[in-house]
Image (tube, rainbow, N blue to C red):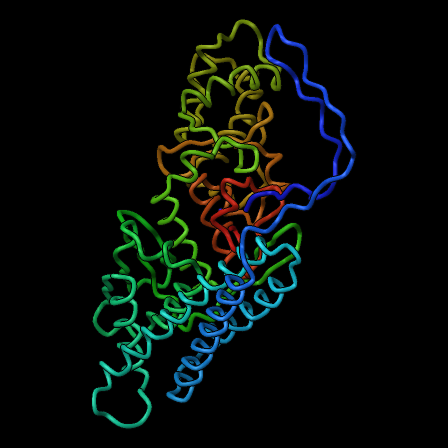
Length: 414
């Protein structure tokens, strides 16, 4: 999920304070700063750069070999180009220690990219055996399945006759994120459903994907206002991977309340009603003859989907109450998909039911600094998964307002 780097530069150091009962220590300063000697040697730098070079050449060679066999190597080629650019940028750094660290990050990613591509080459040899010529589509699907299962210890289940699993795309998306995000105990199964209306889901270390047909659909995301088109199958795959690493690391469970994480708070119908009752009374101009207990009942019923005038209540009073309940209670139920509509803000927060019986509230101000799309605002779990997905797919840092504790799991997070 990247931290914010403090600016590097000279500054006047504050005078040191003494312990309680002691005078502050004071001393004469020359005003000159001695440059910190690097802890890494020229030999170490050269050795690391050599390893990066070797890994990049190996990645390029693997991609070229696979391309000759008819595989789409766009993801590998893109990874090679990205890492080559980052290597060049690292080598321009005048701070040897930072250069060494940056090259180390490139080396790690390049090594994983080589391992990723080699798994496909290995699976090709195992599936094709002594057969000559390039693999056909059926063989390619078997090759991708074998590579995913062997490298990432993933158990894949596809309904008989389903030919739209797009395991090539899954393989590419697994190669886009750090290996530790996908080779872990909270991601052990990939299961498909022959349902074109089913998108994706995650639970119990299992990703479930629906039938995306030709997987040509696109949807728009944004990062700091920049609109980013995303292939629906790819972004859904990354979204579900995001759920798994969130599950593994308890990322949102620990950080959801932070302003840079949406400012989420777990709610219940009762806690929502406690906030809503005084707002209803004030907004609708409710007479004092109607008790808070009565209003609490009206709100609770509405949050459960029922807005009905009690026989004992005067029509004039109900005519004030009913519109407010319709606008602020029925619209925030999960069956109304409130995340797809303009947020309903009551008492400075957005309250809504994410799934049946699961209620949340969030800080609407966070939408301005951390938004990537509307679905992100369904729950804290969806908030993280959507930011994660588009950051890795677009190879862009997350929105500027995203907290460092979350941003470190995104693209260029470390």
